[in-house]
Length: 370
Image 1: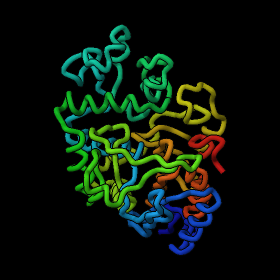
Image 2: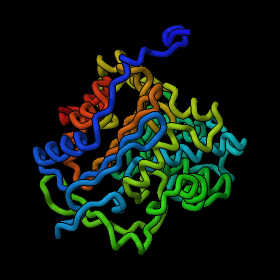
Image 3: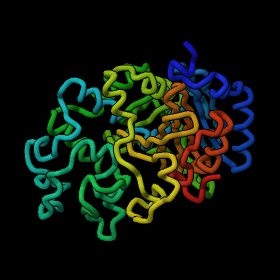
């Protein structure tokens, strides 16, 4: 049987990954170009970690960034939480399509943080899938609203709009509806499963000895804070060594049924927005359809040069993280940076490692993409 007859692409169509030394050289050149102070990366190929490296400094005093340095996971947390959710689905403890009115012991507006929704019955239609697909109808965070109040901007399930607020509701479902401790479940089901010894949903004092501060776009320093409470939207502290293990486990589907692994990364909701941010912008993008840009479960899917692919970013004013994976080859790049300026070099760095895969940088980073 030929490769084509077996439904596989010829071997010549699969690009060869560059050697580690070439990856390191490219990373350093690009970092110098954009004055990126610290960057860590990992490469996964055929479900195996093939390279892990760190460059630059972790703090203003020049201390080196290492592969075990603790950095912000930021919104990469959301995919790790989605992985726990899919385990609960496998166990029959949670349905992705159950309405929130059936998942909590009391109506959502009876919880103090959601009293503002009392006059809008649409809260009851929210589902875990809508949260994970970012179709809740909420702004990213309520504090971005002019009056700092939570509200629906469109009917749930009708439009993609990235929202951390939705993940707060998902966490409420897990903790109040299922009586779970999110931090403990993440520790047991994800961090311990994959041997992630420098990762936690809450601050640990032992992190302090090798901790990354952040660098903003203007080069100023943002000290790493000590998060006392787990947040499904983005509280994970981690290292590149641990993130390599996490995404290698995810790309292989460790700990999930075959059906749930498929559900995690299948295109579920078409994304029409021209750019990911601002989240409430209703302008549409003509390029999205060409790559079938869609929401998966806690990540974004697209049809790339080498078939189905997906990605997840994580960002704040001093953090730039990105994971991109190609399904057929089980091949990923993982980028963690304690300098937000690293996002300027990710398109070139990803192409230098994975080749051209039609990653929709225009949507993820807008005018920043190069």
